Image (cartoon, rainbow, N blue to C red; front, side, top):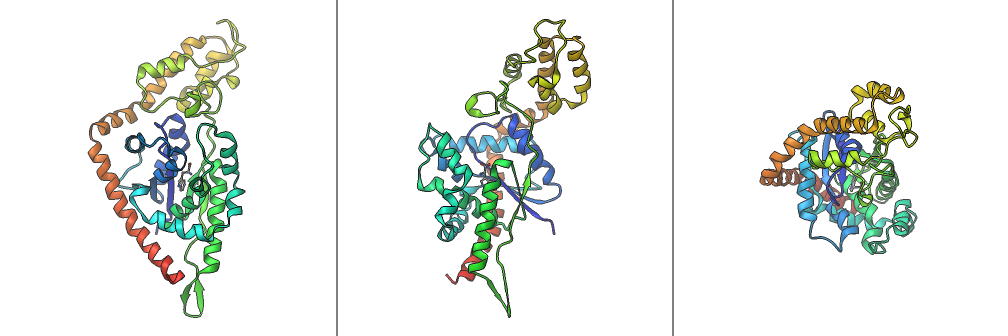
Length: 333
Ligand code: TRP
């Protein structure tokens, strides 16, 4: 039997290059080896975006269009929307009863968000419980592994603590032995991507420094043309320093095959930065072409995407309802 993977993404905006190299390409590979469930975490999005819900349903479909276009294959993996499977909330409720407040209040991601986020009020009951819902997402399917970035490790650790607490309180009667209901899931740490934003800061929707997967060729050209290059290279005849050039790091991620050639252009002052950036846009546009073509088709056929998600929810539900039944049994409720 294949090991099971669950991962999720919050639908909080259109997907960009960071999502492609930081999550989607990795998911696409994993589906060859594992039984994968990929979930749109819309309840999690709601926990921070509850004041602005009008775009949510459109964003969900738009994000899933990108998933499929990037190679997440509904024939291999189960794609679904969290809120289509109500069992998530049932397990979340159960876990919330046995999760001490201190675990949640101490969670570093929680403390950081409360400190950093100024545009929304996150001082809510729901937001504090964010990791409890995430634990329910994972345990509902008894996932063995959870592909996540570094930033999610505290949530994975909390999930494991919740599992241990649940298992120590309730066990499956199994003759003289008692068996544990939930396995402890492991994080499958995604290599941190070296990809920075177009302006050299951390890539983030709120800095407006991303290339959106749906951006037109024209937009991509403009955005790339505005990127900073090596600040020490002022004249064409100055020799450049690719190691400190953000455009060069984009080459190494998206056009690795010609990296050495571009390195030579730069260190030997053979090609200027403007030309080098023009060339990079051409490479990137070419690289995104298959994804964007698939995307265009799916945008015209949203019904198809909705059907994929409905079927995914069905499949997820079969597994989820079994787990809830077992949880109720061991808890005798
Ligand atoms: N919290 C995750 C993030 O922001 C999204 C998420 C929700 C998730 N439920 C999950 C990730 C379950 C992995 C497993 O990226």
